[in-house]
Image 1 (cartoon, helix red, strand yellow):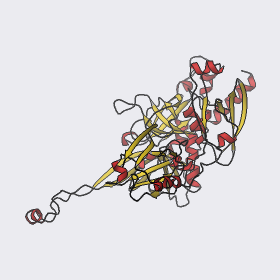
Image 2: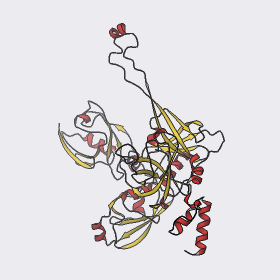
Image 3: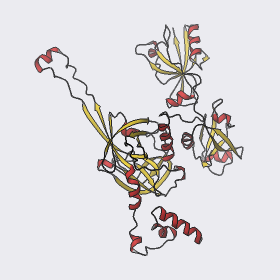
Image 4: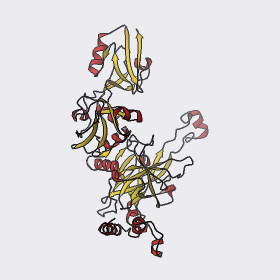
Length: 469
């Protein structure tokens, strides 16, 4: 390291309040003074902690009445209140982060889900009622607003989580077990970590900073004082911290906050292609030096991926010059892009490295969903169906590559229920005709037939059944 570089690094560290760390980082040696032994996160905590809030929610849970509550015989002997149970008030707690001085707060969806009342407690103990402006269960994020009456609140700037590295120091701030604001420290243990069942985008920052129940929605902060993630879940066999915590990356947080401030509707970019992870064997057959990237297997016609020039057999290795390790990483990175621009795709095609321009567009609703309840004297009567499009598939969190007629609901005691049709089924063929729209479905139904052959897609499998009249 040159003398000029040392001076620059020293200045940057002192600006961040971390000057004492220079000696330990610049060279391996024992502390040389009492001041070096007393290294502390206190300056950083004083800077960022006021932007982390406690969140308390209330929900009225209605209790079911006794089966005999309205029976005149029992009410005559036991009074008018017989069998009537009072509603129960359910409380829960969590944390949140102020990301705009005008009172915009990020927390987890599961912290405020179904809440009737949301109260935000600031670090100075002031209590403010919060209004929900956006809730996104797909990312497990929610955006709240509090009335600051013109007073700017302390807030955290959102960092670029793509710049995070394993081993970086972090602080986790939240309200574990409701004991009050608590700060813990650790490092980034892993990136792009999958944790199923938390959100649709299973792509998290893993940290060993202690995170416990009540920390959900709290801040994961880098040493520059910026927000790099929202603490959302832990891996635990006991209910407490075991050193494995997960945070939603800040890039996804920024995308959801931006949506909340510009219409409160989240429209995610559409890619329009599916692929598979590149295994060691695939890498060898494709001539790749190591198993990394996404091998494209199918393209949706006229999708952004198709118009970018992507072809089946291509391997995507980078998006906007950031490595793409596997399909979940690609899906996450695409979801954080801003609609209206373009992104750079780096691919390997027949051993050659190429760069493509990907247009960032919303999923189209083509064909229109045309929600229809089927009626009449036929086997599908009682089913409510819709035309499947990329937009509807994205909305319902199903495979955007699917086409056909989607079953939304099935009425009780209907013909559709009797033949075993279920909500979520996709009708792909009827009596030998491939179905792309409800219009085609109705045409086949109106032809009439004594024997029906129907093919549906359920849980990724095609089921074919024959029904005799």
